[in-house]
Image 1 (cartoon, rainbow, N blue to C red):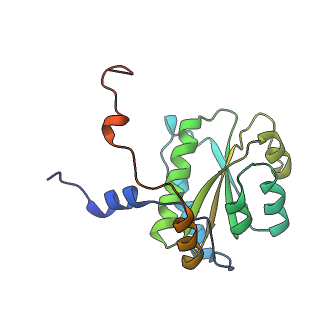
Image 2: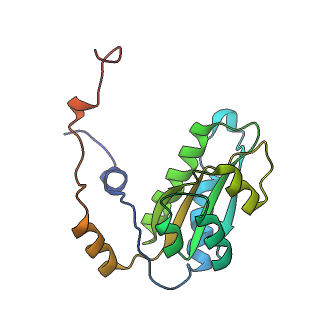
Length: 175
């Protein structure tokens, strides 16, 4: 058997999105811990070329939801984080930042769901983000509503993962 820190490995494998949240705000302690985990994310040349906009105002969340096509989780969540890529940043680093905050949230019992802003320029306008920065994605956060999540999963036709053989190519695509 492969030696590993099974707790961490299982947390990575077990991370699932949450689209339905209880009607209560995150505690400051949980929000700060999630943001702190993001702060410690590695980045290219340690530039940390990001900022994070925290949105908890319901009217602002609703305006932001208009900037994407599948934003029901954002409308359901009490908090959304928007990682902002600064002008000298890299998309790869933004993904790392987002995933680390989502894993940290899960470790605290906080659910999360990534959301795409299909109309990024509109999202940047809502948030006051400069033109040369990126704000393409958000991360919804909240305490999961177990009953609503159970109903949602029961309706979903999606489950499981593709076999590795369907995804892995050796030495070149198709190889």
